[in-house]
Image 1 (cartoon, helix red, strand yellow):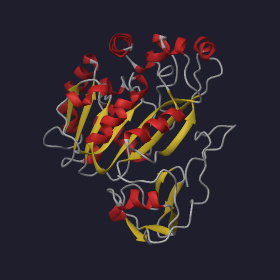
Image 2 (cartoon, one colour; image 1 turned 45 degrees about the vertical axis):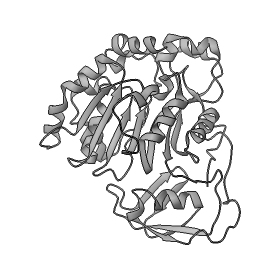
Image 3 (spheres, helix red, strand yellow; image 1 turned 60 degrees about the vertical axis):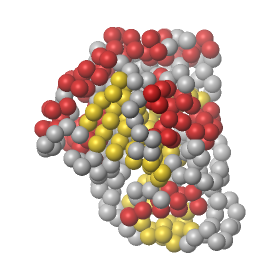
Length: 346
């Protein structure tokens, strides 16, 4: 499907309005501070945006970021504003037409954000073969991707490469399209459904298992929403399959436990993360109010204590005493809709 995807995003789609479904679209409006940043993105770059989520995690000042499937560069340039002139962003994409647009506007965005020189670079390459590119292992603080992994034929390889490229304590923060079941072979070979980010969608439980195999032992769901295809012909092709847009964060932390174990620990958010003065949301089940003691499992304790978030928290407890499984953990389909509760983790 590689050639089909390159053709679809290089030749067929000249603008985001050319999409035939709403799968590759961000539904929710970005927060005010992001709207200001996005307003400074060049129109030619914005017009070729095909993302399905807002992949702008917190506390990025000075960070080194890798964007997998960077396209025309919208997310890279938005992230460049967040990392600042002391940070850097690298975008990887396999479509020459998209990269040409991204590279054309490097100086424009440096000037728009008040930088002396561009802090964004772009590399042509395939996400399944990141090991063949000039990217050093253990060198990125954060890796992001926006509605691209579903287009990859070897998704597990992408996850494994992400693990090797991240620093210890770094995270893979990405949005993509997921399905409530495995996609039948006849649909997975449909070039339009594939290009529209549907027939390459991960069955959510296959993703969880692949992430764990790659080393990301405790995937955390940040947010999710059902996808309404809004194309009657394509809806008939996919039948009863349900699709979701979902954002996950995966931490590279050796030795995380496969379940949420209770050690009687807690954290207190002290504030200080830009644009999050009153609370911090690690994921959909950890919305931590400033100044309030917040009980957490051992994995969550480590995610906050052994990452770039450590400076913003007070940590209570240790790993001396074990009290069993943390209350409230579930194993049902994680995505929220009218039929299933979003119960995934403590």
